Length: 305
Image 1: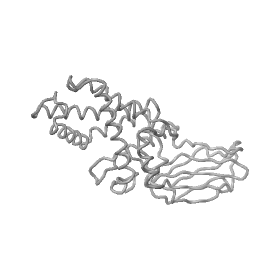
Image 2 (image 1 turned 90 degrees about the vertical axis):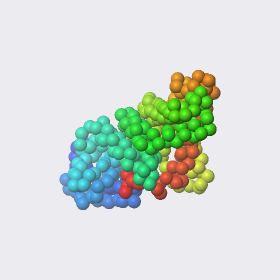
Image 3 (image 1 turned 120 degrees about the vertical axis):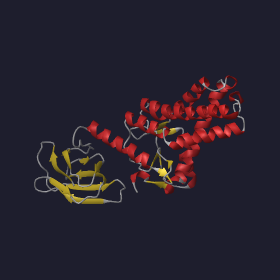
Image 4 (image 1 turned 180 degrees about the vertical axis):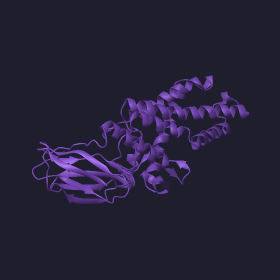
């Protein structure tokens, strides 16, 4: 159940205000009017995320944050106050707004780690909800670390090392099992540092969202351009599009660090530019796959079974 009381700026109750409850998908909606005591209540709701919008005659508009409702839970909206002039107000639910942000941020991490292609391969950094709340710094680091301790991260590094071993890339590592494990360590360290720097450190410093937001509409060309551009343009935590400083700086900083552990004869500016360019091109290619292929084969895409 979600309930509350509609008030004006003088704390007087408002009868007959229009109250609309909307599901996160946008396809689910209920509407009612506030009663004589300004009260409203939406009962028998399935578990999910909901938003409450309240409007009154000659009054402004109140819009709540997304409310996560668990089975059997009752959520009471406090301070549902309609302003005199049109405005949007964010409500504090069951505590202060920072606690709510933290709760929503943790929910975003759980949604991400549940997403797997064919229930095996992680699809952690795809978001299928354009209005998904941003992640707090702690959760950005948490998701980045979780993605790098996933078994598929180790398997991916093993595949890269095998390719480099077969074609004797970075010959300074040598051949044989010792050469393979050196290549494996370098490949995994590249991925780990790039992920932690771009999706954790720089995403926090620049207040940017490290996820890819699925477009899903428009022509093939417009979607492809959008997917590729997301390697260079991303969303800030406030929802605005900005240059993707976090990814670009993250991958090239990681590439610079690779000079510490690659063979001496392979180190230098060329190594830095090559590794940074490979990571950036790989991100663009991954975004194409995310946009056109992965949604249909990802379990729990967007938190849905």
